[in-house]
Figure 1 (spheres, rainbow, N blue to C red):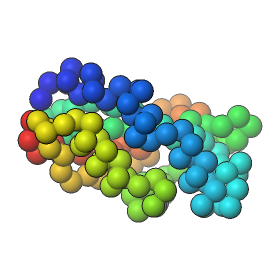
Figure 2 (cartoon, one colour):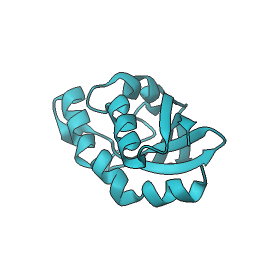
Figure 3 (spheres, rainbow, N blue to C red):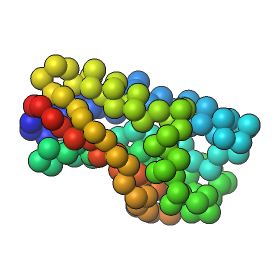
Length: 132
């Protein structure tokens, strides 16, 4: 399937419905008992599709007066992959619904945290495209 098709469907507006901004606060509330303790906001974004792999990004945006680099972001892929508030399995299911019947998504995995800049880290979500 062409990259343009994914770009047309996986818009920032559609992805914000799948992974709303408030989910960051819900995550930190569950983790620390206080959403204001969180060091970053999480955003779901489209990266690309290459071959049979769709790559989405979980972008971690540093919050004002917080330190993203100090927040042990390297261990987050394992935490995110099984945390019920982040709900990656549900995110993939909602992506499947958004993409429709012509595209089938299969297994998924979270890659290593990538530091794009000091205030932005990214965790790639790689999803197998089984049918397009």
